[in-house]
Length: 67
Image 1: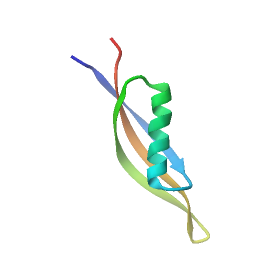
Image 2 (image 1 turned 90 degrees about the vertical axis):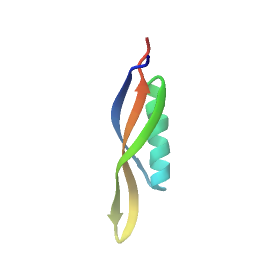
Image 3 (image 1 turned 45 degrees about the vertical axis):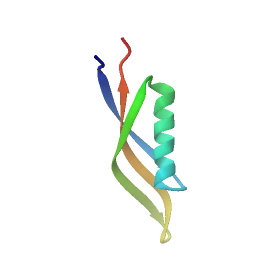
Image 4 (image 1 turned 30 degrees about the horizontal axis):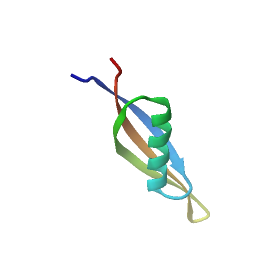
């Protein structure tokens, strides 16, 4: 039997939502052991002078607790 935990992460990128998601998951995996899933809760953009300057995602990251 496994026990999982979920943590919320906010990640940003100036490239795309996909890049923000990848960065968020990669960063969480460096800190948390056994990351095995994630889902996107929210997406936002920052607009400056009529153009998107930043993509932001809020993620829930699931990881399995060590025995």
